[in-house]
Image (cartoon, one colour):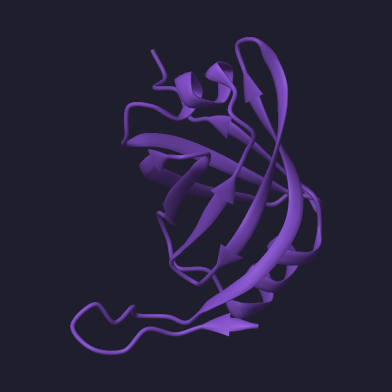
Length: 116
């Protein structure tokens, strides 16, 4: 199922419903979450209320690395966090093949930390 918005708030790419499960690496350990939709430009996450998840994703912007099941890496950035959900955008637009893989396979998220 896809979601497409028309008018002034029109998105550049159609968001496709997903349901892939993933793990967010936090300082308190691994936390489960779900990618509920994705497009070539970004994705939306849903998670249980968990202070460790909120602390890892907040305050936006926070840079994340999405690690696909096939070990490919997709840099992204958290744009907003509220009510057990987070909206993120990919730093580079992904191909439809990449989106299909992320939407159907498990994934891992970790913070991108500045190198010193």
